Image 1 (cartoon, helix red, strand yellow):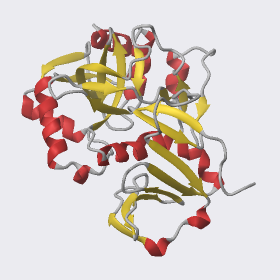
Image 2 (image 1 turned 90 degrees about the vertical axis):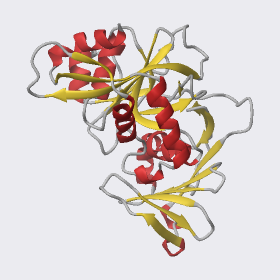
Image 3 (image 1 turned 180 degrees about the vertical axis):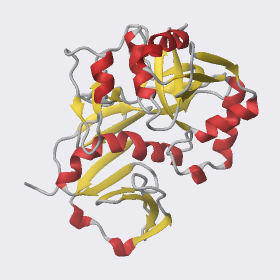
Image 4 (image 1 turned 90 degrees about the horizontal axis):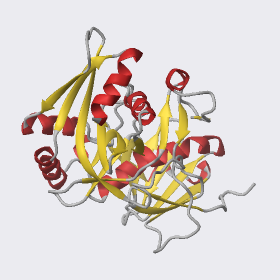
Length: 316
């Protein structure tokens, strides 16, 4: 086999036209673009990596978080433990992925998450760690860190008629007084337990490499109300706060004061672990968002019995 992948997949995600040698999860392929590609992803084998030309500028703080650095010729990079290297050209128009063929299975989900989130940050876009659901022509964002249950609650909301709009990353668009959310990956990452309890045996999943999760591809489930839309108006943002000892019905709190809302939005900054990338302009955009749209805390018991009521409350 050669050292490069010859197949080119064309996708539209987060408002960008992307050419990729691998199919991106939850993003339909396109036969052609109406304009030149915004971003081109290429793959090279691990032998192409040159550690001598690499300098770390932001060390990783956790096994799943990459080092960030720069090459001698000005390309920004993200480097993971285990031999995954991502280099981004200064114009953010080309991405070189350098890894072994054995690591290629990890590339699609990694690219639509951390890599694209980082590129969009470099392009001056606001990204939040959130699952985004569409309902009634508007988008609602579920803010929470990994493992809290965004995807499980999203699954319950989809079962009640909502549509997945973006898994794991909310990319903001629109004017400051009319924020919207770009369509993202429609591949929802769920645990085996969530799939067993909330979805029927007829639903097909793809196992995620190296993670105990599955991808539920919802890209074919686009209703007439959102078909063709690249972004939807943002209705509200919900801060998920499950509490093990919570008793009674789920509690949807009032909109947080603007300062508290800003703190929650800052905590949800994406990519996680890189708050230092939040410059003055992006911080001002977060302040505007905290004033323009309600940010509400949701408190509930972390049990399966409360999920239907909680999903209904957020869709009301």
